[in-house]
Amino acid sequence: MTTVKKLVCLANSRKHSGRCIAGRVDEAQGEWIRPVSARSGHEVSEVERQYKNGSEPRVLDIVRISLIRQQPFGFQRENWLLNPEYHWEKIGRIGWGSLTVLEQHPETLWINGYSTFHGENDRMPVEQADTLADSLKLIRVDRMTLQVHAPGEAFGNPRRVVRARFRHAGLEYALLVTDPEYADAYLAKPNGSYDLGESFMTVSLGEPWEASVFKLVAAIVEAAKTGAGDSA
Image (tube, rainbow, N blue to C red; front, side, top):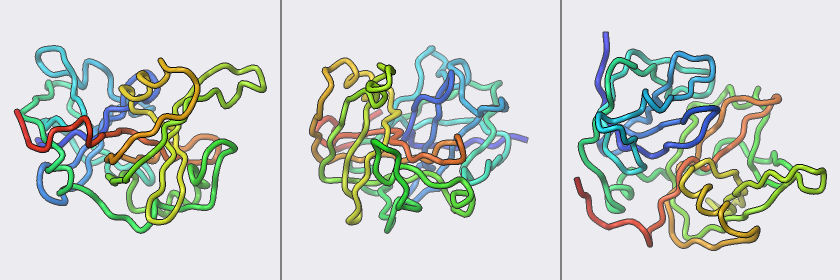
């Protein structure tokens, strides 16, 4: 038996060879849902996430999705198994005003005090993460800085990344950005730091890797680039 959910898309970020899609049910304080595939990595393929016209969901789209059942994976309790037999359907789009209704105000972004060499409060031990009740947050910040750099350059690894540095609820964070639009746009620029103004961001906990769980910026929505009203 399947169920149909209407979501506001709040993340379409890179994951393995596919994407991690997540959104909230289209109502005030709606539940988070992360559609996942039946594959071991749970990523959503291009075919699985397409609309009938071949395009795919963008952040702020309102999307109707066919789901089979809830399928939590450890601390990723928002996971639902998607129905691969049905196209997703775009039924509208929201603006900045609707984001303010969906905004969350967590006292902290889960467990802090653990950092990678170049990050800040960007990881936690997997055994602690398993105690968490959720793995997705939509927060607003007054400003942030996107840092473009090659963290392994000194060791012969030229791979460049984009890291978001921001302050939330009195704490500093530096998290990897997996939002493909922002990652691609800023990787096309020289290494350096780039300031953004008021923005929403979707922060997600990735799946465990080498005994750690990492906090990721799965989507960025800048006030300066987003209309105030809803549109179809």
